[in-house]
Image 1 (cartoon, helix red, strand yellow):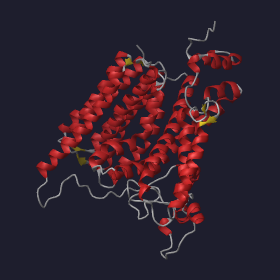
Image 2: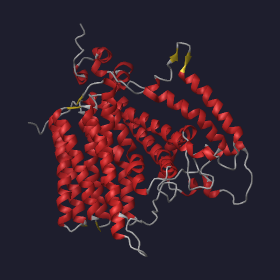
Image 3: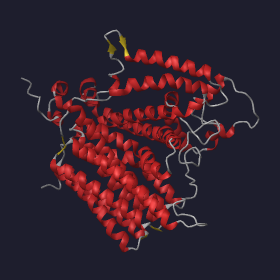
Length: 536
C-alpha cells in the first residue's frame, strides 16, 4: 500500500533529504499534468539539496524570461494578427475592441487561467491571479492614471463596465463559496460575456443615434493614438518590419535569399546605434525569442503596401507553423502519436507542410502578396496562441513548484507574482495613454480588459476541464486568504462605484493616492494572513 497516495505535496519540505525524491516520484499530488519540464523532480531528484537556493534562483530568472516571451509574443505577433483578422472580417471598432482587442491584451491572463484550471489543485492559482490582477488594475493602474493626469470620467461607460465587473466578481465569489463549478455555471460565464458585448454594441448604437448630428463629430471618434513602443512605431498594432525605416528609397529588386535573411533579422542596426543602453540590454534578451517567433509565426499587416508579405519566410511558415502546433498540443503527445503504429502525426505534418510550402513558393512572387495572404493571419493567430499557451503552462508549473518548496499557497503566488507579471503590459500601456492625453480611454481600459479576463478565463478554463473529465470541478483554496482577496476586490470596486459619482466624475490626484494606499494595505493584510499573523 502506498502511504504517500493521499498526502499533500507540500509535506515534502518536512521529510529527510533521502526521502524527498521518492516522495515526489510516488505521490500523485506531486505529478504535473502538462508542460515540458518536471520542475519538482529536477529540484529534488537531480540536484543536491545544498544547491536548492541556486536552483530556485534559476527558476525565478526563467519565470522572468517566460514573462518576456509572453509579452513579445502578444505584442508583436498575437495582437497584429488579431487586428488583421478583425479587418478581414470587417468587424466594427466596438466589436473588435471588446473581443479581439480584449483577447490580445488579456491573452497571458486568459491562457494562464486556462492552464491553472486544468487541475483543481492549481485552480486557486488562477483565482488568485484574476482577483489579484483585478485589485491591481482597479487601484494601482486607475490611481496612477488619476495622478498622472486628473480627468473627468465618462459616466455611462463607467457605470456599465463597473456593474458588469461587479457581477462577474460576485459570480466567482459564489463559485468559491460553493467550492465547485459545473458545466452550466461555466457556460453562464461565457454567456454573460456575450451579453456584455451585446450591451456595448447596443449602447454605442443608441449613443450614436442620439448624439451625432449632421456636421458634428461623435465623442467616439478618437484621434489617432501615438503610442510609444520600443521600436518607435506609432500604431497600436504593428508587425515590426525591422529595418524598413532605413531602407534605401531607390528601388531595386531584392533576391529571395536577401528577403529571407532580412525578414529573419530581429535587429535594426540603425535603431541600435541611437537607443540607450537599457534598451540594448533588453533587446539582447529579446532577440533569441524574436528570432524563433519570426521563424514560426507569420504576421500580416494590412497597413503596409506589401501587407508584410515575405515570400520565402511565409512559405517556410507553412512548414514550421503547423509543425510547431502539433508538437506543442498537449505537450507534444499528439505529435508523436503513431497512426496504426506505423507513421507519426508529425511526419504527416512535415509532408503536407512541405507540399503546401512548395506550391505557394512557385505560385507566388516576391513583389506582390497573393490574394490568400490574409489567411496567414489565422495561421499566425493559432501559432502565437500556442506560444503563449506553452509559456503560460511553464509559468504556472514553476510558481506551483515554488509554492510547494516554500509552503506558500497558490493564492498568494497568483495575486502577487502571476498577477504582476501578466498585468505589467496593462500598467505600461494604460499609463502611457494617460501621459499622452487619453486618461479617459485608459481608465475605461482598466475595466474592459479585466471583465474579459475574468469571464473568459474562468468560464473557458472550467468548460475545458469539465468536458475533459465529464464531472463538475472542485476548487481547493485557502479559505481565509481567498475571502480576503475577494473582499478586497469587492471593496475596491464599491469604493470606486461610490466615490467617482460623489466627485462628479472628476478624478483628482487625491483619489489616485487613496487607491494606491488601499492596494498597499491589501497586500500587507494578504501577506500577514499567508504567514499566519492574521488567522481565524
